[in-house]
Length: 282
Figure 1 (cartoon, helix red, strand yellow):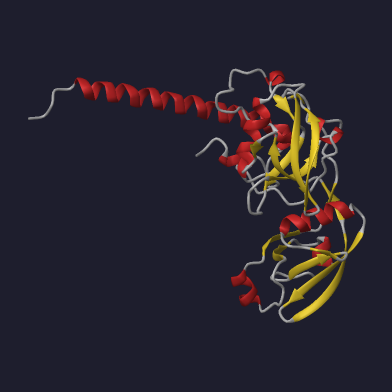
Figure 2: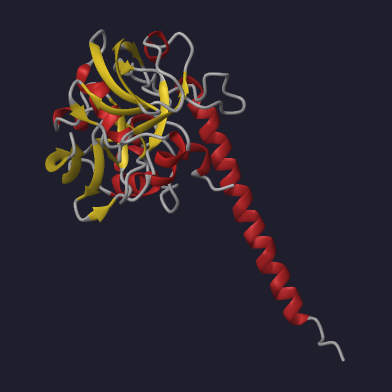
């Protein structure tokens, strides 16, 4: 399993948690730090979506917000979470960077000065509360449009509604297509995430949906949560997913895995050398 595979499916604590390839000997304080938790973007062209911004971090000082989609860091394209990790970690603390983002459907650039990555043995900072709707969604495709019998050409298709969530209380249902929030067009899950975070905790939002051939407007009052989407379960880290308080143990596991990979590579090399020394078969 890739050393990044475990992290690729969960929000990433403060945007820099793992020891990166080629940097295992670099002290944490010498690696760049932005201070955001990110997940992959489902939009064309990749990018990573900001799920949380750490208090008093370079990201919050630069004006980054939950729901922003990070597209580039300087001239480096951020195609996925691994690119984000590697690019931030390869920069030096104090380095000034330009971050190209997409916010509310428009691209813009912000300037940030990277800090030093904090020691993972220190207590993790308290994440900011995020507005929470309580669904999972995916982009509306042409095939899904036909299957769901809706008129919309774009939107966020609800694939799951979590019990007792604002969405459940608003009677949002699976296969509903969300086309706008408070009058703002929703082209996919990224737009929906941005609209929810922009509205904020405790706010009532109007969700315009298509349910088959029917058009409806539902009202939902957003609640707060440390993550806009629930964390998937991670073996050994409780039903709620990755617990930052246990992160050092997980990092130790990753480092042990790296050591095992290195030993396997050495063994393969020795076997290849021995094979070369064996006499050729007649």
